[in-house]
Amino acid sequence: MEIKIIQAPPQKMKTKPADESNLGFGKIFTDHMFTMTYKEGQGWHNAVIEPYRQLQLDPTAMCLHYAQEIFEGLKAYRGKDGAIFLFRPTENFKRMNASADRLCMPNFDENAVLDALKKLVLLDRDWIPSGAGTSLYIRPTMIATEAALGVHPANEYLFFIVLCAVGAYYPQGFAPTKIYVSEEHVRAAAGGTGHTKAGGNYAASLYAMRIATNMGYTQVLWLDAKENKYVEEVGTSNIFFLIGDELITPPLAGTILPGVTRNSVIKLASHLGMKVVERALSIDEVIEAAHKGTLKEAFASGTAAIVSPVGQIYFRKKEYLINNGKTGPVAEKLYNEILQIQYGLKEDPFNWRVKISD
Ligand SMILES: *Cc1c(COP(=O)(O)O)cnc(C)c1O
Figure 1 (cartoon, helix red, strand yellow):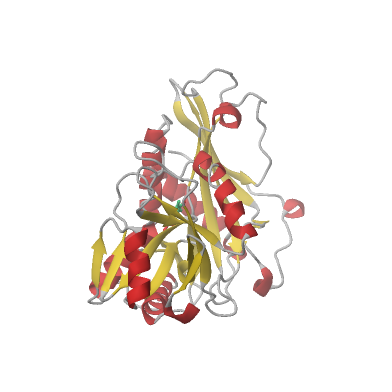
Figure 2 (figure 1 turned 120 degrees about the vertical axis):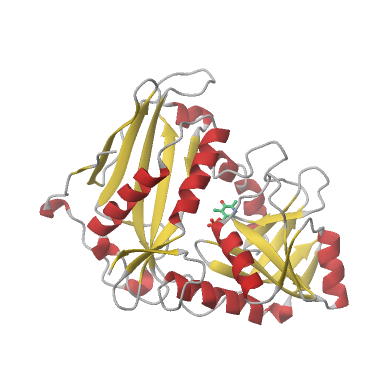
């Protein structure tokens, strides 16, 4: 795939944020983006790195009506000596193609797109912040652009990648979350799209999330759609419970997202000698463990935070404290290990890091 590069003229380059302690998340976009176009019969074409711009879409572009839209999320990290790393990027592009399959969208060449991503990140490298815990968030997206009403797989698509500078997730140290167990709403049912990063999943999750936040909780803990019994995910992260000496996480059975961080936590925890189990875990078992004192820790995993400790669970009008509402040693250890691998501060036993520049 040939990638055309159109540099933004100096007068169109944006001012980079001066204060790296206040970047937040998802607000500060860089100077360039990658786009490519798909048309049935023609395949992917017009691959170009170009100045960041608005999109032009027909009002009937099918993504706007029938939600044929998928995305990914990964990061570029600046190491101590200025080197730039990606973390397991191929996993994200594989997962995106799996999402594409489920939504009847076209596959793309994972290596070619990774190559485009590297070029894009290098072109906008001055946007990668260097403060501890900061990074460049990468958002690959695919949308159906065919202008037509009527539900059918579109015959035209746009793929794009935008980048944004993001701040440290824990600028003041870990902040354990309070999570709300939803028994009234579900995120994904077996046979649905729960295992894909499809935009529609997130629209459907907002209602329960609003209930949780209105009650003072940070996130929703989703239960399975069939029996309303087994824990699945927390917000847009995977979930782990440390019960006794077992680190337990729900299996990949089609209703949860196969998180790259989830997989990294499983591999790393096993490597560190912990007992990791992927199995169905009921909320009753979690609550019983809380009563018995064997529920040692709980944490969510995802690209944004790496590991996000859970300090409290709300279930059936009762609150359960976990590790006295504090971050536990296992969550902290896994967080530090993964972070150090991502930033090139530690050896990388699994070859997860992809160095794109010295
Ligand atoms: C993105 C996401 C995750 C976490 O995946 P990572 O690859 O670890 O970032 C988990 N659950 C949902 C629903 C997600 O959208």
